[in-house]
Each structure stands twice: as structure tokens, then as C-alpha cells.
Length: 334
Image (cartoon, rainbow, N blue to C red; front, side, top):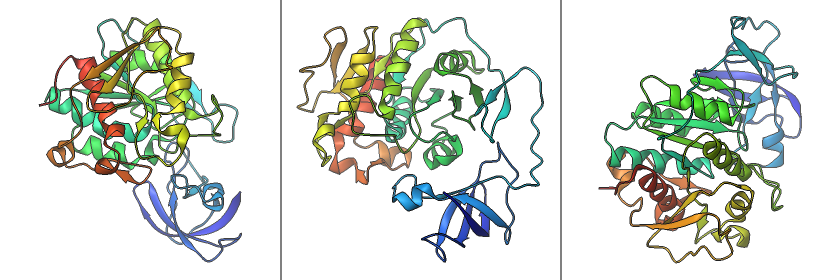
């Protein structure tokens, strides 16, 4: 839904806009624009914005997304490139990423939701103070990396070092055409990453169907990592507090991803939780890990939150990410 809006203020990749038409006309809302596809707007400028998320009442997607103006001058260099957002009005060329030969010996942890990223990065820093963490940002949630405030905070604190945006995702430090190339790019970075995370952006896509959700990106990452020589570890999506039955215990997102992950992988369960691997595919290895996320927020100055719930309200959700990183790095969180 494209609506007219007036830009009131601009800051970094964010904007404040007043909606001029549609059911929300007259409201002032948060807006986003992406420098990768157009020049920044100016205060006072009238722009077109996409208000689908706002008008659908989506939580994570409840912002106005600004379209590039007619006078945009963005023109990336046209060499050694491939196309992002191909054959859409927003397509733009991106430089080909570096590629390692394989992932042999590279610790890879697959995260089911973007809200697992902060505890995973904190766990890596607690285990190895100089750990360099790279994230392969997959399709399944928000496509633009700049949408995530978490990424910016983790980078500013030195807890996340590089982001590779794969497939139709864009805006990372490195662009990759797919998850396979994204993982190999992460392994080829200089300085070398000590841990590679793979996961989706905020606002997971979901239809409540077994395979109709963004959580299937985990299966793609597990299959890709295994095919390229890694021994990937999955942080399962667990919850003791989600009001939706399909996400209680082991989420249906994780169950579907594990059914679709053809190569055996390791799955980390926090030792303190009562969740079991009952009904999960037997080809995978389910391991209990004696670590959790308690104390990491205060230690690293970050806040863990998912679906409006904090650590104390649903600890096993965040503990799963920490357990997976500890399993992959072979250590215990101090």
C-alpha cells in the first residue's frame, strides 16, 4: 500500500514522517529508508511510503518504508557484480563476495530467530574474549540488514564483527547471492571469523502451516553448512511462556526445520530445561549443555527480548542460543 507522506526529521537510516493519505492520515510514524537503493530524504520532502505493516497491525513490521525519490543518484560500480532484488524496481548491483574453499573446522551455529542473536554473540564473547563473530543474514524475516537495531548495537559493542546478507537480503558488510556463498564468504573474511552464525532478520514470516514460515531458513543453513564441510549446531526455538501451543516446548518451526535438514546436525538443549527431543528426527544428535544466558545482559550491557518477553519471563528461549554457541566452541560460559 503506497501512501503519500511528509518527512519531518531524518536520522541515520531512520525518519519521522507524517502520513498524508489512507486510513492513518494525519498520524506521525516511524519510517525507514535504505541507502543501498536510494539517496536519503530531506526534512520537508514529500515521499511515497509503503504502509502495509502499519495497516496490517504487524508488530515488528509496523513502520513506514520510504521509497527512493525520483532524483536518486545511487549508481554502484558496475564490475565483478551480481544483482540484488533482481528484476524488481529496486534492483541494484553488488560486488561478488570472497569465497573460502570449504567450512572444514569452522564453527557454525544456526539461529531460528533474530532475537537469538544477542545472547549468541554475548556467549561467544564470554567463551572467547577475542572471538570474531560473523552473521550470515538469511531470507525469512526482514530483508534489509539496516532494519535491525540489534545488529547496530552488537557491532558498536564489539560483539558482532561482520554481516553477510544472503539471497534477497541486502545491506550487510558483504553481499552474497545465497546462503552457501554467504557461509563461504564468512569463512573467507579477513581477519578470520572464529564463529559463524546463520539466521534470519527480525519479523519472521509465518502462516502457521508446518512449512510456511521463515524458520525454514534454518534447514537451508544446516544443509548448506554440512554440505560445505562444517558440523553445524542448531539452537532450537524453545519456549515455556509463548501463549501459542505450536511454539511451546520445541516450536513447530524447529520441528519442521529438523525434518527438512537431511544431513545430521547437533542440536543444543539447555541442561536446566525440561524440554526433550521426543518426536524429533533420530538422525540428529541432541545434546544437553550446562550453560545459560543468566548474567550475560548485565555483563555486556545488552537486553535480551523476544515477542515482548525478557529473559526472566522465558529463559529457555535465550538459553538455547547460548547452549548452541558453547557446544560449537567447545567451552563453558564463565
